[in-house]
Amino acid sequence: MANPARTSRTVGRPAGAVRAAVRARLVEVARRLFAERGYAAVSLRAIAAAAEVNPAMVHYYFASKRGLYEAVIAETLSPVVERLNVMLAARGGGGFTLRDLLELYVRTLAASPWLPPLILREVLAEDGPIRSWFIRQFAARGGGLLTRLIRHEQAAGRLRPDLDPRLTALSLVSLAAFPFAALPVTSTVFGMRTCGRRLEQFIAHTGRLLREGTAP
Amino acid sequence: MANPARTSRTVGRPAGAVRAAVRARLVEVARRLFAERGYAAVSLRAIAAAAEVNPAMVHYYFASKRGLYEAVIAETLSPVVERLNVMLAARGGGGFTLRDLLELYVRTLAASPWLPPLILREVLAEDGPIRSWFIRQFAARGGGLLTRLIRHEQAAGRLRPDLDPRLTALSLVSLAAFPFAALPVTSTVFGMRTCGRRLEQFIAHTGRLLREGTAP
DNA sequence: TCAGAATTTAATCATACGGTTAATTAAAAA
DNA sequence: TTTTTAATTAACCGTATGATTAAATTCTGA
Image (tube, rainbow over all chains, first blue to last red; front, side, top):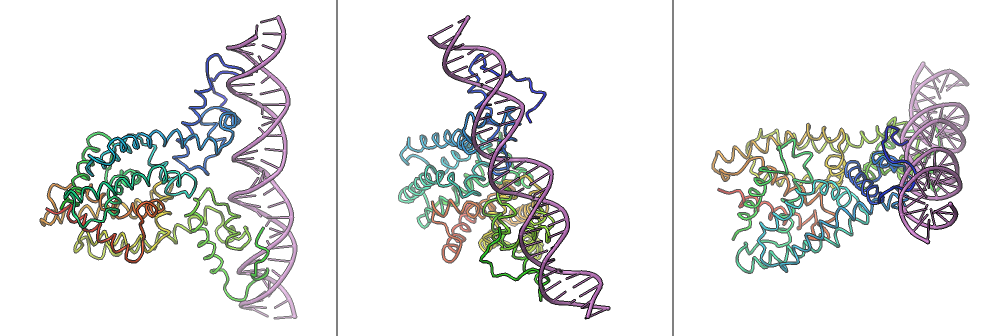
């Protein structure tokens, strides 16, 4: 039931390369709607209407709703995961303090506002293929690296020796991630913000809490 | 297409009071399915099949799918929220240490496995009526109380004076809640468990991290 | 004994869904 | 110019959904 007021191009082969534009628009719109309402609650027709294209276009470009969904996930999570992997692999697990990692996580989340709600839905709330993919590709590696780093710092005497490395890793991730996952609530309750001076305050506060809480 | 192997009672007015039993079974089944797959992804027929009743029964008892959903929320979240409110109000904001509150939150979450996924879905991921209800009834009160408590402890010299009370409250909630919200991931990555000795270790670890991280 | 209330069922409604197709248009390539 | 190809559309398919209804059955209370 496409928008009648639509000013789009007409039927027929377009002048330039329209393919990429329409495809990108569909992914963008779908990402927004999936993050807002969840996969099952968003219909193909709603996506098509929001992108101002015919529902059949989803099939033309992605073969199915599921295909569009996978494109959304791939084009949304992959760059972030890749960036983190590169940064982590670059130092081979050394040279980081816990605070560095905390800051890396926080800044990554703050820079990608659509990430937390999408992870919330597709990884934490949904027991689907994305969850296992995320665990395999990201959480397991990051968790392992984090645990190793903590053991290393303990051996070097820079962390309390009685700390459980895995629980400490979990605490770090909790402190970094939860405020973003809970932003809709915390912004109301604590006036939490994820940009500018407030973000710096948050990093400073959390970094210090973590440092003092884990110091020997 | 109800279960043909069903051994249930036949049509007609039952001997005892069946009403409460069927109603409770529907709420129980719906709560499980909603927590597992989300509201939109669970059909009336799926609920009816799992509860081994005719789909029309949902309408008979709850008028609509939405009515069933509201009953689930009311009968699931309300008692917990109420209990927490009572416990918090009982001391009027005094007499608690931060660790006490942490432990209260953690034990409440650990004792109600269906709570985290439901809050995750209906409060954090969904921008619906449940979110504002939750904020009004619980988060705002709890957050305010927590912030006041922290200021009080600072004034008494038991907490670092330069701590931002609201950020500290956020940290406490993060440390307590995230491991449960992320349990599907953390159980794989960090071997997190929410019962027995592991729970005690978690409380001890997190409590100490919080104490040392906020001590003057 | 029997009228009525309570409970459940099968069947059905209109609607919306994901998905598909053939036709149409117009640019690009031959 | 003719043919091919990319892009888009309207219309349609079968299915599943939430919702409704009338009938059936059985207990309860007068």
